[in-house]
Amino acid sequence: GMLCDFRDKCLLTNPLGKAFVNAYYTISPPIADFIRESEPLKAAVRVALKPLIVVAEYCVTPEIRAEGIISLVMVFGCGIGATLTMMKIDKRLKREKRKDK
Image 1 (cartoon, rainbow, N blue to C red):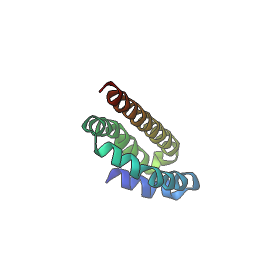
Image 2: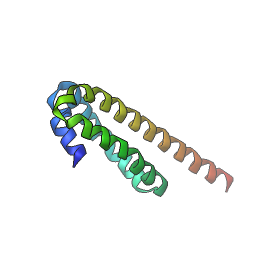
Image 3: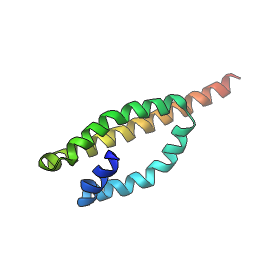
Image 4: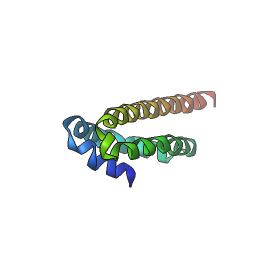
């Protein structure tokens, strides 16, 4: 719920936030499908989301919303980058295991 509030109250209220949300909805489905197949990735994402939810809560507080938007977009960007890196590493490890067999 907090992330939805953040999306609606902070991100969708400005052009940069709207662009981020559009990019997220374009990029996230295949990433979510990939994560769904891996218990370690699911656990890592759950852990990674906890601080993001705290930051989102911080951002939806009206007095600090403007300052928090840029920070949260940067944090989400880092999270997406880390997830894509984990996906690449996972694929490489699976490929190496197939070679060893």
